Image 1 (cartoon, rainbow, N blue to C red):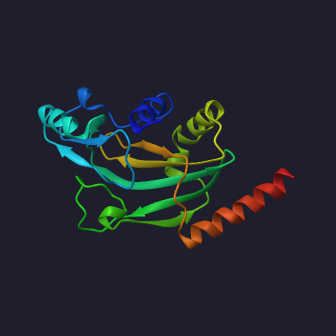
Image 2: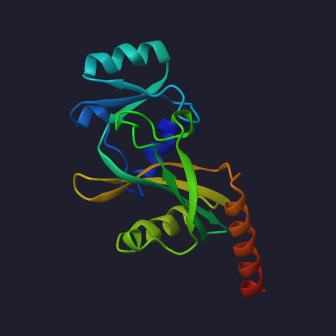
Length: 183
């Protein structure tokens, strides 16, 4: 499934960025198939969205909003395994992707449920999503939208890149714990 289709599915479970046709500029414009922050474009109006979209071929566009923090939440077998915090360079502007292309990195922060998200419907929604789409491993990329003070799910990754040594250790530790608990 491409990213546009994924966003439509995710919107049945989570708060997702608002489609450009229903929000004010600026907008993020992406090809429906992308990875690693490549092909991340900013449009200042709807005409620009269409101009960029015509160059990309199949595309989707949504609001660009001011975010506070970004996280990746990894689940294995339906259980929360680890949360990664996206460490962003101080000089990375809001209108750029916070990803490896712009020297952002993930830091393993916890295997515990993030307190802020615990006060939302996020974890219940993950459970509902995984009932309908049973995945062995999945990572949800989230951010805090400053306006409205709410979480937003950007996407889910069914093959998340787990290369940080400490993250691998935590995933292995949690899998051992789960295996021992579940027998």
